[in-house]
Image 1 (tube, rainbow, N blue to C red):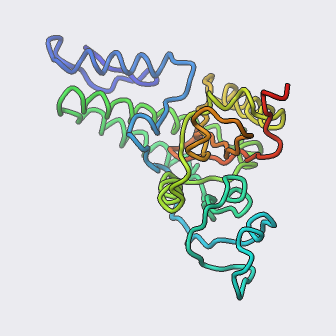
Image 2: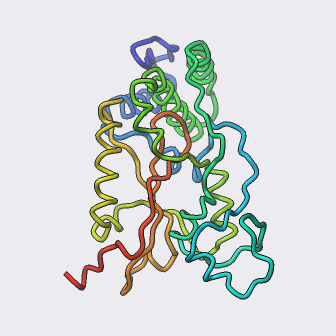
Length: 264
């Protein structure tokens, strides 16, 4: 059996090989799917493939809400390193705690072509168990799709550069430092998202669709209790998985703007 990605032959399996069906099915699924591969779910936490080195994260006290939470502390300055306090997602967004400063995507043509060949070679070397093979094929196929998207980066950069990047490492650190928060899918939050959030999602979806004919993946960072039935307005940070790498883009955050459905 012959495997192709982007119309190019990668390698062949013996027709009786146990791994052939897994790879053929997964490759076909990723190629024909109308949704970008979800890198977070496929690796039980994602990977920050494609990121630049992260700058040291310093909490910048720029939010009046955050300052109110910290009142009573002596010696507050514009920048400070502090022990974690229970900030809201909106506070964290305004503090830019998640932002990866200096983040850059390498769009050099020679680099992209080299990485495409490297990951195709990696795909051809997967020879472990069927479960590991399936997981590896899906992850590499996701990377190949995003590398192909980078070839069009210049055409779409003016839009996507409106949103700051963050890495899975940053997200994991945030959730560790603020144990009252959780990362989850956006679905159950859509009903009470404000018009501004929906407009941002629609714009991001439109640009991603033009880029690669696939829909983007959105996630939410919110208080753990907000993923349960809530009798109060919820307070989320909206993230999108970049179509160019295995990293997140920060779309926005809302609190008072969120709708409370019981008031409709």
